[in-house]
Every structure is written in structure tokens, then in C-alpha cells.
Image 1 (cartoon, rainbow, N blue to C red):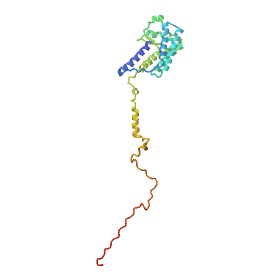
Image 2 (image 1 turned 90 degrees about the horizontal axis):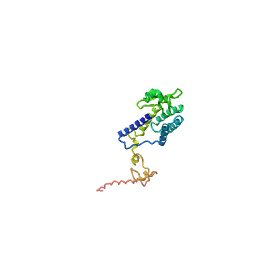
Image 3 (image 1 turned 180 degrees about the vertical axis):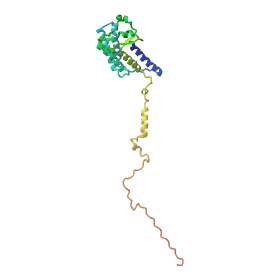
Image 4 (image 1 turned 120 degrees about the vertical axis):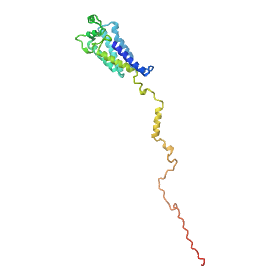
Length: 252
């Protein structure tokens, strides 16, 4: 549990640092999460056996129900980055609980983590639904065999996968470090329409072109399709040349 809390805090801190670098701390557009109430209920049900000091089947039932709720919550939010990794971690831990009826704990890992000394192990009470590892247990590699001395805790590979997925998920829920996407700025009203009309004005011909008349020669009469017949009367008359006058002989 401590590893999970540390992962959540690291993811949240990384997201806040990204916001501060971008100077957009006042705008935190959180991504929408589906069924958040299911997450809260599942966490409370998971912690109920420890609060009530239950053991055996009374502890295993609520824990399995909590894991089922967490798996459904993760599956409903797979579109969020990092949720797929969270789902893998939950599935690993749930598989160990279903197969063994409890979460096996390695004694050497407890000593290595500094939780208790070797002579104190017989008097150590494990939190349900945990129990000491035995030869009949299966999927031992996915049980609590990894010591974390810094936190004095023993975790499983499923817990580590879950922690990495949660850290990535919390960071991705906040705006990324690279800045807002190009689609975040709303388009100017009418801007795209004006640009489109200019392109159309340069390339397209008006539909009502005939209403405006011919551009080259407005109001010019249309040429007749029938050929013009030439008549004799239409030909210009040739001018009659005057006859030259004969000079008269004065003697004559």
C-alpha cells in the first residue's frame, strides 16, 4: 500500500511541476474519469477486513470483491493513458488471490525489508488476506516476495506494475509538459469562411454569369447565324467616267 501511495504522489508531483513550468497552474483541465464512485467504494471494501480484523473467508471475500470493482473501473477507463498498465497489475494480484485463497508472503523478504527480525517472525501478524508462503502455494513469483527496505514493505510484481501505471496515469491526467495542443485555441468566428470565399473568388466563375453580361464586350449584339446574301443593289455603283472633250478647230 505504501508503494502505491508513493507512486500516486510521484505522478501528482510530476504533473504539478509540468503545470508550473508552463505557468498554467490556474488552468487544470483534468481528463474525464468514468465511474469514480466505483473506485472509492472498491478501495473502502479492500480496507474493510483490516479495519474489522477479519480473517479467512471473511477477509478474502471483500478483497476479491474490491479487486473485481477495481478491474471493472480500469476496464471502463482504458482510454486513459496508463490505465492498461494498472489493469495488468490488478490482474496479477487477483490471479494469486484466486488460485491460493490468500496472498503468500516470503519470510526472507520480510527480514530483508526490515519489517521484523528472523526471531520475531513467529509472533508477527500478517494483514489479511496475507499468509506465510508454503510449498503448496502456486504463482509464487507473483506473490509478495520483493522487499522494499526504504518503505519497510514487501510487495509483489503486480504491486510494482500497478505503481508504475498509477504514476503514469496521474501524470497523464494533467496537461502534458509540451504545452497545449493546437486545437485548444478556439477558431475565430467566420475566419475559415472568409478564407474559403477568397479562394473561391479567385478560382470559381460566378453562377449567374449571364446576368452580368459579357466581360469583354457588354451589350454587343449577337452575330446572326445565317450567312448574309449579297444582292446587286447592295453593290456600290461604279462611277461613269466622263468622255474626253475634243478640242474644236478655230478655223473650222
